[in-house]
Length: 399
Image (tube, rainbow, N blue to C red):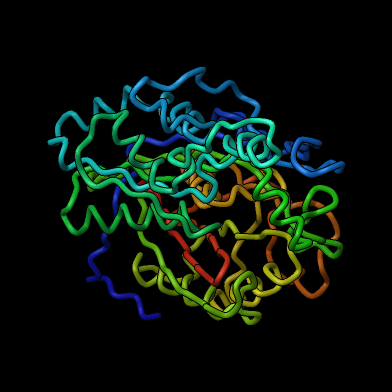
């Protein structure tokens, strides 16, 4: 890719952010958990019949109730979103006070919505233990963004993106486009997904769950761990310490649940992100892999990395052995991790420390978390069912 110094970068600033996950709630907790060989996942018997499974659960306290106006949409997913929002709510509202409410937008990603709260109701109904009807409003995908909009009192665009594991990253890209199209002055973006039986049993039926803690690119990798997360970002055109520089999207349409084996769509997404950001591949200082720990995904992603980065030995790691795969929120929590790396400039997230697959071990995996020289740009990959691919590039304004 030729670097054009006259390229106008449509970068937008990350004015405020929050990330809740198995890494806990604060930036210091996140950094410690990602730079030390500690287990952050939980073994649980709550999701699969007569079987324990490792999950990336958030153990912090959630808000106890939602406002009366949101009661029809009440779910653990919504409470998780509101809990995260409360961490930055005062600062968000203070920042957006300068803008008309009809210029304030909400774009969020999810794949579970409130379905987890309806699981018990549906079971009771279909086993004739209760005649209570299922209220589907709380599990509609669109309800998340609408509920947050109503809670904040904003009047601009509000919609939810649900493209499985690329949802939150696509919400961030959509927010950037909305700002650059001058359809909003500030956009709350990100993603929220919560643990539920539907997703755990679904991946179990696909034989995609790991028997233990997942090992991205590992020689004995056998599947994923499911996690939950809430990651929110307030974007605007104003400069911030970390900017969302660009995104690249592609669609494999290769298989309903498997990526293109040669990583063609993944490579295309990464190249498009670099092009939009106006930088070269060798300028990326860290790559947060999608890195799910399934045999097919890891193999194709490394092929794509080899294609795009070629001679550049980019430091890279997957963080899913620490968070679990947070599905519709994965892109948000991983972008939040990348933002913290850029803000701190002293560490990188450790890759799993097990034996690597000899066919994939030619990469510069982060096995020492110490960052010895400042980095300017990071990339985060999210790849979903059907080949829905997206790469985000974040950059710091402090060289």
